[in-house]
Length: 49
Image 1 (cartoon, rainbow, N blue to C red):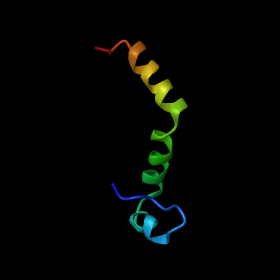
Image 2: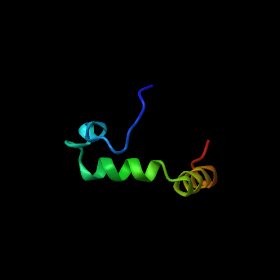
Image 3: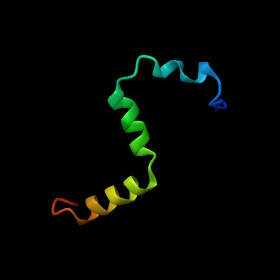
Image 4: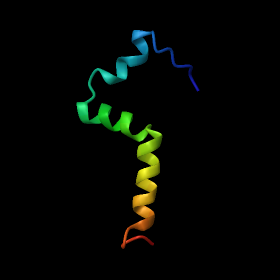
């Protein structure tokens, strides 16, 4: 796995053409509180299997 250098502009080249919703989703999916709340929501959903 390549090492990520947050200070390097090359590390962000893939984001140059990203939509704002793509960037927002990346931030959200990495949020531990969101992941926990999502798992609780799925587990307590009437449609849960």
